[in-house]
View 1 (cartoon, rainbow, N blue to C red):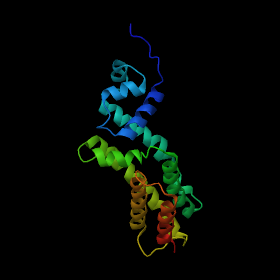
View 2 (view 1 turned 90 degrees about the horizontal axis):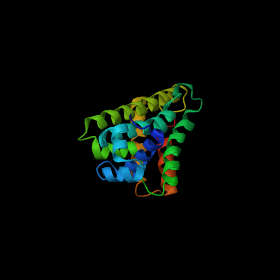
View 3 (view 1 turned 45 degrees about the vertical axis):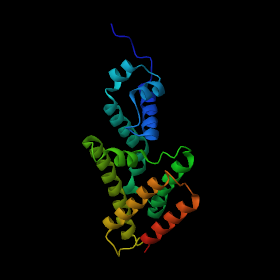
Length: 194
């Protein structure tokens, strides 16, 4: 008879996400996982599969916890400029509260694995596509209301803001200066304004 699990799968998955986020996929060994997750190697493999399967689950968990909540409800946004500012603020808040300079788990994963791992590329592309689409809807609404410029198509502006957000996520890995955040947000918003 199999022994019952004596650990919380969600808690272990959160620990795995944090470890992969800090170290990356390639620098995280199976022993690192056992040591940091507090479960045996056999429990790890029986519950989550191999290291790659665990990484995929961790990346999907990151999306569920960090990305999806920010993208939901864009159709009902009242203050479109405040929403864009909120997205930049989320990156800033995460960076300033992160003393280990982890950056963004998705961006880190894209840089490290997407070129060589089709599973990770598929997940990352879906996240990026959904993020761009949310920005597009908000910017299109901002143009309709006369808040945002219509000098450029909403899709082009969404890609510009998306790129600024991702650039900021990379930059925070080595510099989390508050003034830098303010500059990027202010210039990005000024490019949007009508």
